[in-house]
Image (cartoon, rainbow, N blue to C red; front, side, top):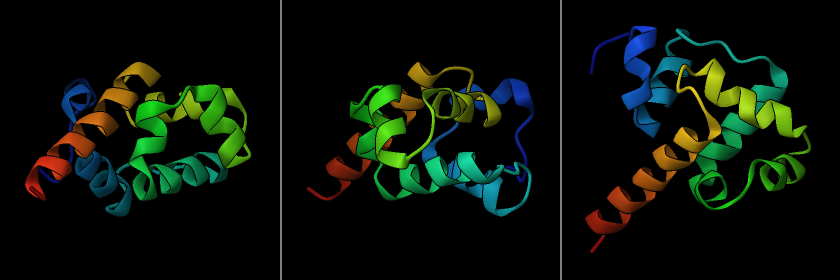
Length: 97
């Protein structure tokens, strides 16, 4: 995996790639966004199967903050963030079988 992804290439990121970008300091998340990101890494099914409003309520942030996470990571939309989390779940479910 490259050490950093150009913004244009970030729409094909995996959940692991997002975590790498954050831990390496390539993406710095303000407090509320970090709160949502931590929850996303702990419970990707929350993002994959819930609306932004439901995720916001469970994280104690605004719906706008949840949507903003996708843009801040360079993914582009909450829909793509949901897909990214869903793909992670599918990949890890099929590996465990």
